Image (cartoon, rainbow, N blue to C red; front, side):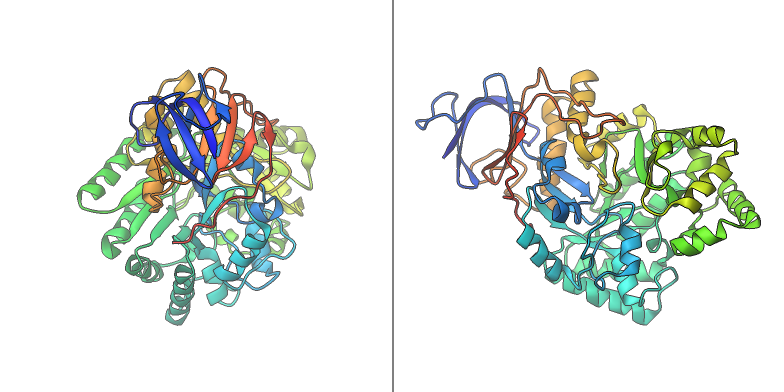
Length: 522
């Protein structure tokens, strides 16, 4: 028995806070009582503190991080107790052991792992269970690995009918093994080469199995409305449950499109489409520096690409393609080289923290040549951050009733975006404490109960008897996000306790490194 006394309970439903004692037995909440009335000894006095459900991350990338560091400190240290991983079409199964394709796919997102590659979801789960996890985890089948496995290592092209049928067979195996759905990243190779017939076949299978389709849409810049329309049409035609990943509009000129984007989603809902979206609470994102290149160059292996970057003529072609982008997002043009900052460069670490414009100035080059040289020289991870949207857009998306919380946390390279360590605390600190965008109970509902409903896990995400004891306690007076670009993994202030399935994982600044997380199978 574990008893929290005199807690200000924000229960995850969006209802008004109330004061109560909470009793935990084994992995469940067993009773909610009037304050200071439990007949059992008090384990944690919550006077002046908020007690709420553990936060649910709808958009994670931790399938290798959990194997490297099973306690999952980066998530536990921000109060996240459940994660949905395998997003943006990037995953680790099905794949041959030590697959060259898989290693390159994972380099800048999931990070390294010595024995990478699992034939299917079940074999990955066996490794996961052997290691254990500090957080509960649910998994999506990644589209990229389906393509590579079915297309015999040549996925950067349109698939044949036979290959699509193989993908569907592989997807069915994953769904029967407990994957909650499939993700794709139409922005990234190799998923960007999938045609409509392939997508319709995969989505029809998801619909028959009542599973979720999560998608990083094809363009988030000038073509964002067309790209959003593409996935809404796919959902209309198949009836699949649609989750749009990290909804945003990229580029200064495109912030005006956010209202139209939300209207399109609202209209689709009125038609009967089951569509939601998630969001991370930062104006700047993070991804591979290589992803700034035009789509035709993303189909190349890194070695072939780097050889091509030795040609001045080829550099001019790439530059022209980037400046005249059609049907894809040229971040360099949409946001500017001054808004793109080097996060990790294993070969040239001296440039970390500098914008591409600053790197170019230091090297005495134009920004395109500096960018091309960095890619040509890089032998390991190359990550960037890019300022893509306005604070006004973030608040508008955050306030929408269909929004669910996600981190889009990456764990590749020596340094990463602060969202990987403090997105949940940042959301509460900036948009509740500092800017009062939403009341606390509404914001926490978007981080807990709304996510649980979307994922069909009714025993998590709320504080009520019978629910799993995934719990966060924090001091609303002192809660503060202390992370920064320089120190992304700085501990938060005011986070007092994190409990996963009735086991304390974090208490007053110290981790227990418990691995009490459950594997959540559909």
